Length: 184
Ligand SMILES: Cc1cc2nc3c(=O)[nH]c(=O)nc-3n(C[C@H](O)[C@H](O)[C@H](O)COP(=O)(O)O)c2cc1C
Image (cartoon, rainbow, N blue to C red; front, top):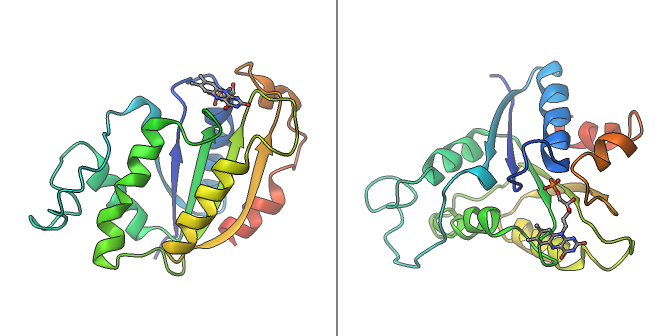
């Protein structure tokens, strides 16, 4: 069976850093024989979890039909998952956080990410190298651990407020190690 990668991006800037990184990852994964399911959730209209406890009542993870169930299916079928996102207020952009909130349905059903590899790629405007990503990384690590996923690593880019910063500064092969771990 063809291996599948799901990419969840968190930006609404089509010409921005997250999209550039996601394009690279998508192309490399396809070259490696992966089927890629990509959801640019910053451009979708997926709202948060209502905690209504109606998960799977109609056979689908969530009773809301706004695109999350399609993402849930892709995640279920994927062996690798990449979160590719800008840092917003030291955390996830709300559009992507809404999708993560909706993992509540999967967690409750025991549809965990066991055996799946995950990576986090993110950019921020701050020049300071250590602290800015602390909150995002904490949320990512705790959430993925709770979901039983295997975290393979992060790629973090600072001082990247211009949409083309990463494109201009990323060294050739800089993502190779992470991609190898994510897609091996
Ligand atoms: C709503 C909003 C919140 C942001 N919050 C932060 C932040 O907390 N720390 C930071 O360093 N940069 C912050 N930024 C800057 C973005 O993280 C940065 O420009 C990023 O590289 C944009 O990625 P993109 O080109 O993929 O959209 C914020 C930008 C926006 C629009």
